[in-house]
Length: 373
Image (tube, rainbow, N blue to C red; front, side, top):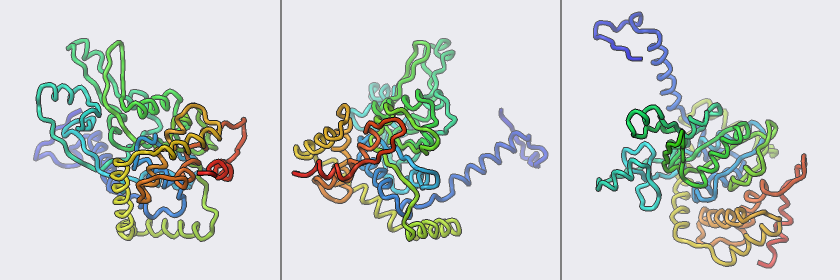
C-alpha cells in the first residue's frame, strides 16, 4: 500500500490510520534497536557457558553450542551480548547473501555470474551480528522462497532470501530450540554443517552460502530434543542458578545497576569488553597458524573411546575445541589441560543414558582416562 502526502496535507487527521500504525511501529523498532544490551563482560558466574560461546567464535568449525538450563540463568542475555565481542567479517559489497570474497568459500549465483563475466567484486567489512530466529518462523521464512509463478512466466529464478541468508557469516541464535519442530532443527543443523542453504520447489532449485555459528538454548523442563539432533551440536553446557551467595549477590547488584543507568554501566565495562574482543582476535589469528599434533589427537580419541562415543564427531570436535581453548589462553600448543577443559562440553550430551536418568558427566573418570599423558 502506497501513500502520497502533499506539503499542504500534513495534519495527523489527514494521514491514513494504517500509515500512522506503520510509523509508530517503525519508531518503536528503531528505539528497540538502539537499546543497550547487558555487557558480556559483566555477566557474573556461568564460566563454562561463556567459554563455550567464545570457543565457537575462535573456531566456528567446532559446530555451535547448545545451552541447557533453568529459566533466569542468563542464557539469552549471554548470547545477545556476545555481539559486543564478535570480530569483523569481510564480504562482497552489495551482496544480500554476504558472500565471502575469498576463493573456494562458495558464492551465490549472482556473485558467481558477476565473477564469470569478469566484473570486479569489491569487498567491505562489518562486525558479525547475532541473528535471532523467531520461534514462530515457518520453513519458508527460515530457508527462503522461490517464486514459481515468476519462473514460469519469465524463465528466470526469483528467490526471496530467508533467515539463513541473513545468518551467513554471522551467529544464528535459536531460543527454546527444543520447541521447534524436528524437521526445522534438522534444516538448521544440515545447513550449518554444509555451509550451504539449498531450496527446491516444483523441480526448481536455488542455493546460496550460509555459514554461521549456531547457538541454541532451552529449558529441559519444557521438553528435550532427540539424541540424534543433540549429537549435531558441537558443544553442550548444562547451567544452573549460582549457588554461591557472593556470586548471586553480585549478579543482582550488576543487574540493578544496569537497569538504573544502562549507558553508564556499559561504559564502566568498556575496557574489559575491548580486552575480550582483542583476545578473541589474537586467538583466531594464532589458531590459523597452528595444527594439532599426534599426541593431542591420540588423547581426544582415547577419551572418546573410553566414554563409548559412537562415530568420530566427538573426537574431531574435542581436538578443535582444545586447540581453540589453548589459543584463547594465549598458547600455541594444546595439551592435556585443554582436553580436560573441553571434554565435558563435547561429551556430556552424547553419552547414552537410560530413560529418565540424569547422570552428570564424571570428571573423575576423565582424569583417570588422561593419566599417562
